[in-house]
Length: 236
Image (cartoon, rainbow, N blue to C red):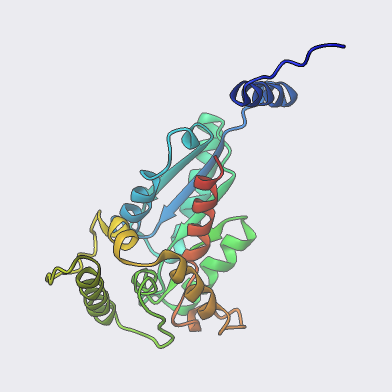
């Protein structure tokens, strides 16, 4: 009777990995995500901060690029298409996922809606917010289903952040929201609740059934992009 030899699990995993690579041949399995933001700093800073939380081994498989455009909702999809085509032409890089991030703000209704429609027809996802990206921040602390002004977002974020900091650290600080802060993602991870924000964003979305997206206020689809990024980070 032949003797069985016990092989270390790590060795078995490496062998399985090598077999998998051989089965797919030499084809490049790297996947790329392009995030194109309407804002120049607020949104790009937030997503760049997320990018820094990914383990290095994940970025051997996934490459996330963030483009800050500082343009209107009507043009952002065109820019995303242009960047996607340029990457293919100049670098032979094919983006598996292209996302645009923009707000309703005070842009014309037709611009906001048409941007979303064009993106859908161009295989581009939209992480839009109505009325502002800051709604996503607010949802880390509370459920809001009534429209808010930009100034109201700021005051709400400050009040909730100060309350959470006091509760979790015992420190009574005077937090002030800075729109272009590079620390917003880490602050929300520490003092907010991302899982709850996703649940509340989905709850808001269910309140609207029509495709007149400019009337979906308040509402944000940022949660979809966050879920996608989280799934990539967890898939190691």
